[in-house]
Image (cartoon, rainbow, N blue to C red; front, side, top):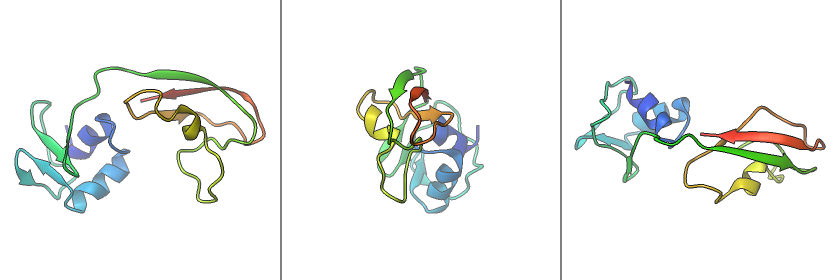
Length: 114
């Protein structure tokens, strides 16, 4: 599979972000620094991003959250408002993302998964 996809499946970053990490020289595969996001890797290859080894996700994680009012459904907010990611921080070791969106003033059920 392509290196950026491997990194994304490992929960380190989204594919586009993973491609930027590779292009920036922050990824080592089997001891060699790689700069091509499409470089083919096998599940048995040793992939290291920023000094940490990446493993393919083995467990699918699902978190169901009753989103309170005044929280933005995003992973990062440039206006520094409260985000739903603050509510699930530390809930599991895997990196999770919200599925779908709810407006800031809306309350309701929100799903997170890796």
